[in-house]
Length: 211
Image 1 (tube, rainbow, N blue to C red):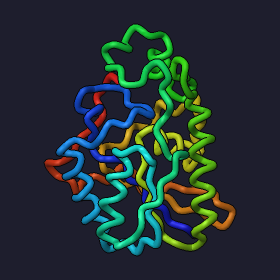
Image 2: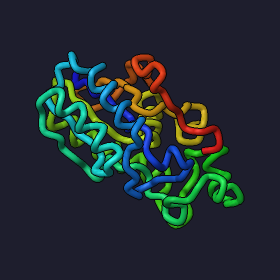
Image 3: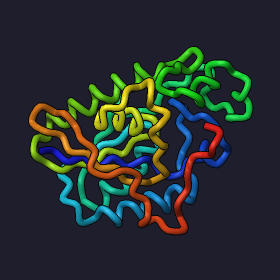
């Protein structure tokens, strides 16, 4: 079994401004850096052999906090990025409220596609292939992957057998939370725990209800 600790990035400046970040490289907020440091301390005793992250700075800096405390290099992968949002990139959720595609995102996210961007189905396949390659590289090990909210949500669909049609029944994970999955020798994953954020205490933060 390969055990993977998926950490959602800490609060970003896009989260603060209620903007759809996508591939736009919004950095962590001051709270986000504090969250990343807190989560790194929380997993300090976990015997990681590798730390991976999306190459977007909000995830890379979150992963770097873990890598530093474990004295490991940070390995970045573009395939771990958030969904490419096309015309939604950097726009506020309020600005997107009247967009028909965004309405579908809010109502049945698994069937949606960002206007001019990536579909959730495409995202799921991209992230699945990237994680599959990482797991294949680390058989029987325990590794950390710092990534984004939607990648973790589409992976949870795979781990739990939930179709994209019913993805809206799976809640978002919070900033700097820890979700754990195990992968067998065939690289089939199963969920062990999700959205662990009690360690953050007063530092906790979530996505707003209108995303």
